[in-house]
Image 1 (cartoon, rainbow, N blue to C red):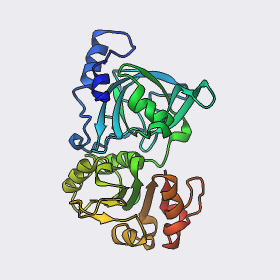
Image 2 (cartoon, rainbow, N blue to C red):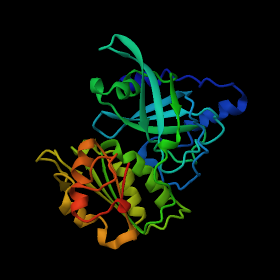
Image 3 (cartoon, rainbow, N blue to C red):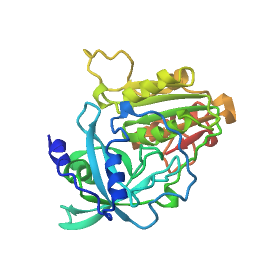
Amino acid sequence: MLVRLLSRQRVLPNFQHTSSNIKSFFSTMTDYPMILSERPAVCSLVPPGECQFTPTFQSVPLLDRIPCGTGGTSFILRFGLPDATKSMGLSTCACVLAKAELMDTNKGEVVDVIRPYTPISANNQVGCFDLLIKDYGENGFMSKYLCEDLAVGGTVDFKHIDFNVKIQAPFKHKKIGIIAGGTGITPMMQALHAILGEGSTSATTEVSFLYGSQRSDDILGGEMLDAWAKQHVGKFTHVDVLSNEPEDSEYSGEKGFIDRAKIEKYLPKASDGDDVMIFVCGPPIMYKILCGPRDQKEITGVLGEMGYTPSQVFKF
């Protein structure tokens, strides 16, 4: 209900109200579907260095916000861009930094809170970009603000720096395995756009995705991934793994955690050498168990035990 009420407070972004800009603004609300299941895979690559957001923070408005999934805690947020007549120009894969001035109740003062977020929209989208964010409530300083407190029409500061640029498409690896948990799916959506979208020049002929969630209503983008898998039979497979699904659930897929047995069953083998790349993105415990901390180049954990090398694993 809160989201519905806020969405009625929509205002035009804070830019010059020329006829072309106003037309561009309204097209962002109609030309590009926000619901994930309605989104096609789109390959629209640009090289690093062309993003509208620079190393200096710029304010843009929240244009709309809708729930994502059935769990009630994740949302898709659509933001405007500094130039409403152009696309974001973000390379794949890459993220941006968001900043907001929020009250720190422990300190009793307003502080700058900065968090990284990976857009899930492609560069065919003009005048806006989309983020998928999980609301962690009182445990999530920035996420609560963006998902609950920020009114549509309110602004957030964003910037993009060189450090935000990750492994880049088009990918040279023939076989890509993906392991993600929760909102760790967002950079994987970027990668899948680049691999599956029409006109893709990636060398990848096989991509398999293990996606970990607690319950079926926590799955994000499941209908979209299933649709993409049906459209790319033989190239893309998507497997959900649920760790806390009720026993009486109708869900019949994989349960438990992403472990060695499931990796052996679904992902490309380390013995395939340079043809293989494994992408990992999720909560810290996932890195610890499967491959070692993100800031550690060495591959430890399950993937290390299975023989995967640093050149075969990319930690987002």
